[in-house]
Image (tube, rainbow, N blue to C red):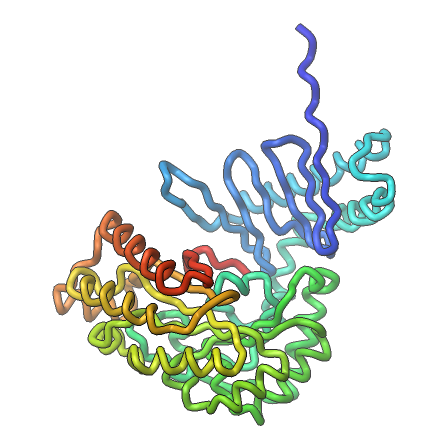
Length: 393
């Protein structure tokens, strides 16, 4: 029998990334510094963080399984990425037309950049990351590809019972000189790969609570080092509504484009159970204030929080709240499956109170109900899922 024909290469040389696919079972993407960023292989998807941690994901019977890849397996993925880049270089030298002639020189240069890396050098990026960043706990999904700048540490409230992101990290504002040095370290870490990051996210939990006077030098420094990128950040209802609309308009004029708000629920008794400040009325007023200032809004709602005890009120009142929010094109409603952390105050309180979590089927029903409510109430906004355990930076 004749040998099977080899599949042609699929290669993409983009402004901010290079993608190599020697066959339809393997696709590997690299940033402009030559570091691998993602793999699709054997039906699994892997993502590499800037700290060179690798996370895997696969679908099993419709269920998404996620795991952190151990160092041995990560090194094997790094080896494979370098091997594929080497094979692409050899194919190009043999005269195989991997890309259009006009891009051949650019591809050759990028392959040399990729091949300068070794698994050991990639793993050593962890040290550079830790030199630039404190732990980055979470981002909204639309900001996973942002340049994260840590203007503050922790969360100014940090008492929500379900949240363990900022435990042991008191809220602090980074001094001006330290922030400037941080921005320079982030710029050096990203290098040319910064071109692929289209926005700047001001971290941590709610950096936007700072006064505009304190935010102005932060925004100016971010814009000087990472120009032309819109700004985004978290803020909570309780803190955010303290700024008047004029202050939010001023931030908009400085480049702030999007504000992400963890509303969680429109059911006030559940908010109280979660020790979440604010109310449904205050959330509606605050979103209206932000929209009046010309900002885009990402509203985050939790699915399954409060278990059976609060399920009916959560769906009813959250659906009603969605109908009151002046959201439209460019806004997002995130539905985030609730994750009970065993070391959280919520878990301790729920155990003491006999609060029973929803089953997977019941959680899916609640997700569907909230999704229907969001699409009906805000047809111009995007409704998306927000899996907090899929965050990779």
